[in-house]
Image 1 (tube, rainbow, N blue to C red):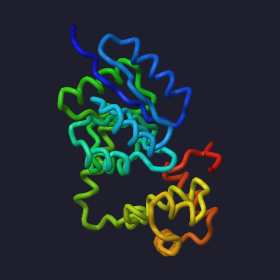
Image 2 (cartoon, helix red, strand yellow):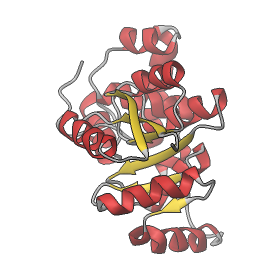
Image 3 (tube, rainbow, N blue to C red):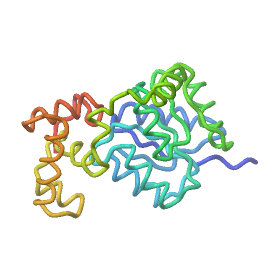
Image 4 (tube, rainbow, N blue to C red):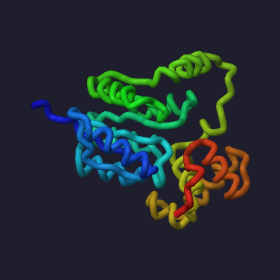
Length: 223
């Protein structure tokens, strides 16, 4: 008997998480061994269960999916990671693969496409939803254009993006400092740099920007 492939689902929407779990567990090939509703829990679940594959959303509370990928791949590069997301922009796709993702699948995909994506990356291949391959080509051609300006988002550091996400979720400087193990003064300095780079001047403007970038779900209610 062929051993089932072990999967962890990291998705903040419970109804979608439970639905995916039921579908995958109904297969003879897969077993969902854990799930997580935020980025930090996703990392803990992977450490605990050592799955073959992590099914991961980008817009996750506490730690976004891109940071989760980097953390997990640093600890165990053999674990395959398939992004399952609504984000279709070339910038998200490129950042996901640069961070170490093995596949990128849209949430409007059929179950058969999801299975194909999972099997593809478990066979050491990359996977990209057919509907977004054109965006990859456009991004590649755009990157070769030396006159293309660098976006404000692209000027933010990894740490600044992490802090922007937490600000967008409603966390205060002291709470953010506790999560990231840095001082509140360092958080305040990063916030000032973020506001300067984005030309935004209030916490509400930062929150709106974080939602626009997909770092925070529109329905997120804060801590």
